[in-house]
Image 1 (tube, rainbow, N blue to C red):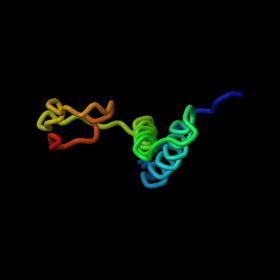
Image 2 (cartoon, rainbow, N blue to C red):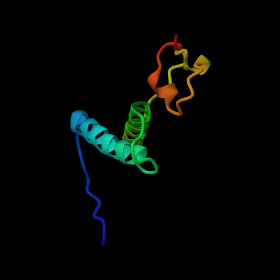
Image 3 (cartoon, rainbow, N blue to C red):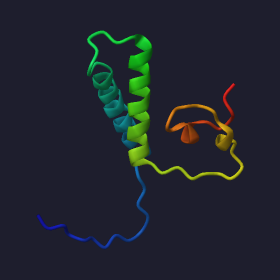
Length: 92
């Protein structure tokens, strides 16, 4: 299969809502499967954590977040691997 290069002129904008909706939908499905991968009846917390992690991984695949030098994420003690992208304030 040969890819064709197109000469695009003008502004190209991404339809953010459908891209985000797809990331969330895929993340929920993937998280649900992960939570049940090795456990027949996982706890509610484990299901929610697996879904949340999978959603954030899907979003991270599709979006790039600029870091702001004034944010306080560097002092966050959250153990989530994506917390620097989520928190705008230090957790309570």
